[in-house]
Amino acid sequence: MPDFKLRFAVAVCRLSRLLLRLLRRGGTTLPGVLALKICPEIISKLSAGLEIIAVSGTNGKTTVAHILENAIKSDGGGTVVCNRSGANLATGIAAELCCNVGIFSDSRPKYAVIEVDELAARKVIAMLQPRVIVLTNLFRDQLDRYAEVQSAAGYLREGIATVPEAVLCLNADDSLTVGLADHLPNRRIYYGFSAEASQSGCPKPGEEGTRCPRCGAQLLYSCSSYGHLGHWSCPECRYSRPAADISVERFFETEAGSDAVFKIFGKEYSAHISAPGDYNVYNAAAAVAGALAAGNDIKSAVGALAGFGHGFGRMERFDVGAGVLMILIKNPVGCDRAFDYILKSERAFNLIIILNDLDSDGRDISWIWDAGFEHLCEAGERLNRVTVSGMRSKELMTRLEYAGIPDGKISEEKSIHGMMKELESSELPTYILPTYTAMMKFRQRLAKKTRRRGFWEG
Ligand SMILES: [Zn+2]
Image 1: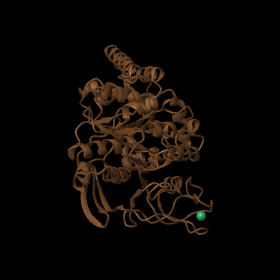
Image 2 (image 1 turned 120 degrees about the vertical axis):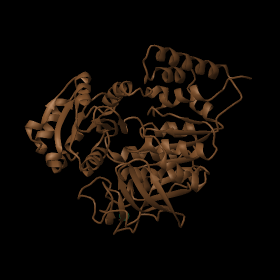
Image 3 (image 1 turned 90 degrees about the vertical axis):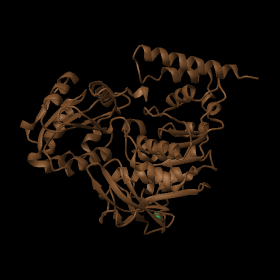
Image 4 (image 1 turned 135 degrees about the horizontal axis):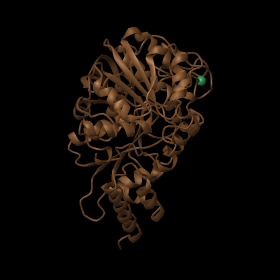
């Protein structure tokens, strides 16, 4: 007997999404909210029979999901259902499934790559019953939502406990993600950086995630890459970083990405990663782990690293003025990675930073005091001008002044129109660092200018 409640929920969801698009209101949660109201089991019902790969963690989810989608497609996996606009709560996932899983026809996609918010993981993982779960890393994120990293780890653990058959792909260098899966029966694949690919040195004292997940003692590090990621071991209980099945042996960064050598189950493979920054090398390794766990072959997994488009607003380039690169910021570690990347360039540049404090940005903006804005001073004369904007531009300005950026270089511009004019007439390349809602808005303007499609048009 056909499931009328399910069919009705899918129809309402699709219709409301269509209407909202006609009204040019992309990115709303309403269709998913309606679908879940009508049929609360809709996620489990629609995902039944799909091979699901869930991706979660603090940073890198969207990028990893993109690479996985490419890897599966290039391995002949056909259409892949993805929640690609970053709609990673239950409502967004429900809407994506409603619109892309054909219950009114016989043709059904085989695979789904679903990005899952850490806070939603407890419920959503149980509903999705994924075959593979890829975890990127755990860092302190939006304080008002997570209180602390430990609660995000707890939600993920509870979610994962409902799927003992799922293969876990874990970052060996991150004691927090390794620790959250401790004692769970799942099969796991570890990925990480070799000592050569990491820097020598160890995390800052008191850095979150540097305590032993088993006994709480201060961990020792033989090397580290960034944040609390590195080769860790506990001097008290001997718990230590597991060996990586997928190891980034070494990599060289260029403006356009990285050339990396991976050791995958003992054999070496060269790969080009088409996104710059060492954190994208981690994302690449995570995606390879996920693709292999889902049964794809190594060649198509490694090949997919060379041709993935970036997630919206995440290292996205726009051909406006002398060139624009947009890098989403949302927490101290992500922001520091963006600064590191910008500082590597030898050219002079302008910077636009936009700080909003709506729900999806995180209401608490105190994280800007944990981010290393001081490093921007290292650019010296290359830093031509910093424009601050957004709802909390005043605090941002204070932060920049406190960091030691010369007053004469900082200015405020409230309107997107004003910033667009600035970009168009600029003779220097500009980096835009926006929080989530600012990114969505600004991106729309830039995309219009360069005729890119809206994020809801995929
Ligand atoms: Zn210990």
